[in-house]
Image (cartoon, rainbow, N blue to C red; front, side, top):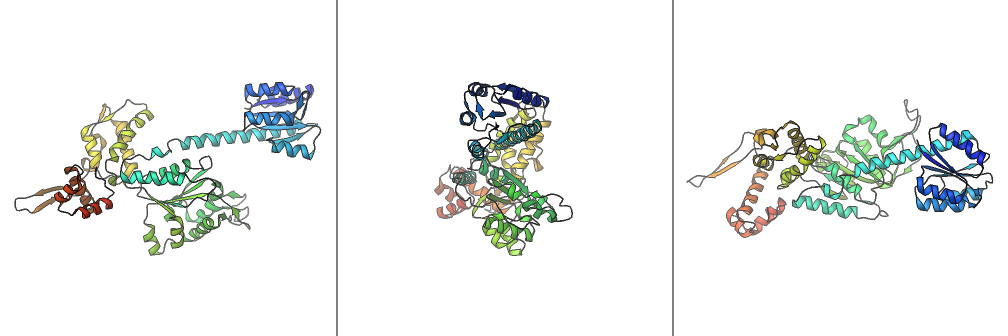
Length: 465
């Protein structure tokens, strides 16, 4: 239960208050002067202070600012037999939570104390979960040394640096499943000016079509048969913070119209409601679908698409991030060992080669799950390639050779290949062979230097590739 400090000079009243609150299992300290109250407040840092307006050595209204200066989140209930509107207004302005008038009813006291302490408990709970959620959501959580990841971090830092007073742009995160779009959204929120406000995440594809509207916008009591009470929608729940709409391409067309209006008007109307509610939330949407294709097909609104992609961010697939897979694997391993309280493991050379050559169709999520499984079921100190259990023993390889007839021979694996990946691999191999010298790499590949540069830009490659 809570710790309570009572600053009251009437001995009988103070004793009754103490006895009443102790029956509720609160820890109660009683003092009779402002000086003693200020000293004990500093010592015990109470969850709630009950402060009398008139004390032998001063006014409670003079003591109140000193208490809130010491602890800005202090919860104080003022008490007096000389209540006036002016005193009540001044007490609230100075930081009092509420105002109780004497003669004091013990029942009113119990209700007031219970209400305030419940609010304190909820504030602590929310603070705890926000801090826990923000851990691992710093900009450094977006691991990767590839050019694409460095560009993504730079753009997120740019967006995060916008002042809280500005209207935040809508952000559209695109990328394949498992690339880390959810992490990018959390990093954007917790690195910005809204970090201490709610971060509400909703998977649009997981909500039945007939419930999407009520979930997002809420409803009024009596709006439909089962609406026995009103419910706040997720747009309102995210007020002042961020609303992350994952898999937004799954939304039905009627809801798309409402979301467009909510973004443009910065207000929502609950189902069954008669008035709009103002909402100030940053909107981050994410999808692994090709929204442009959905627009052409007529299943996604063109105006909503362009409204969402004011600040587009692309999270690249793992296969296009050079050697980031190995960097991620080496980062995940000690974390997984610590999570399961197992001895530390390392990757063998063949395991590292397998990680670097595998295509990772499930991206970072697949890599994490693969290492999770390997850590759990590998008894040795070193994880080998077979222990990873990757299909095809660590990824399909394309063998390229040249016969004496100068005819180029390519052995395509049974699982097939992607032409773009072969092209990228050739450019990368040429740069490595030439030790980063673009002119030499262009000669080895039979290309002009300008053509090589164009293809390097196409695949986000650097001379160090």
